[in-house]
Amino acid sequence: GGFGLVASSLRDGRRMIMVVNGMKSMHERAIESERMMNWAFANFENVTLFSANEVIDNAPVWLGREKTVPMIGDHDLVVTLPKSWRQTASIRISYDAPIKAPIAKGQPVGVLMLRGHGVPNMDVNLVAGMDVPRLSLPMRGLAVVSHYVSGG
Image (cartoon, rainbow, N blue to C red; front, side):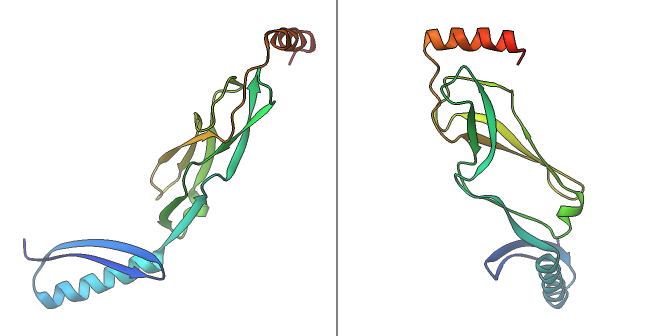
C-alpha cells in the first residue's frame, strides 16, 4: 500500500478529513497531504442551509384552526460544499398540500431537497413548527361547503 496517512485539520472553524495511500516515500506523503488539505480549504466552504427552528416555508392546512403551518428544520443544517455550489445547485421543498389537520408540532410535513452538479444530493426532513388542531365538526362542515362553493 505504500506510505499512507489519515489526517484531520481545523482551520477557521472548518474541519477537513483526508485519507491518502500509496505514496512512495514519507516526503511524497507529506507534500501530497499538504497540497490536498490546502486545495480542500481553498475550494470548499461550510454553508448554513438553515438554522434550527427557522421557518423555511408555510404549508396550507386542510380543516385546521390555522390556514397554514410553518415548516421548520429541527436542527441547524451546515454542510460543506464546493465554493461554486450556488451556480449549479437547486433547493426545492416538497410536500403534499394541503396538509390535513390535526398536525402536531415536530411532525414531519415536508422535505427540503438539494440537487446540483458537484453537490451531493440531500433530502432533509422539515417538521411542523406548531400544533394545528382540527376544526370542530360544525366548522369543518362549513369549511368543506365553502371549499366546494368557492371552488378553492
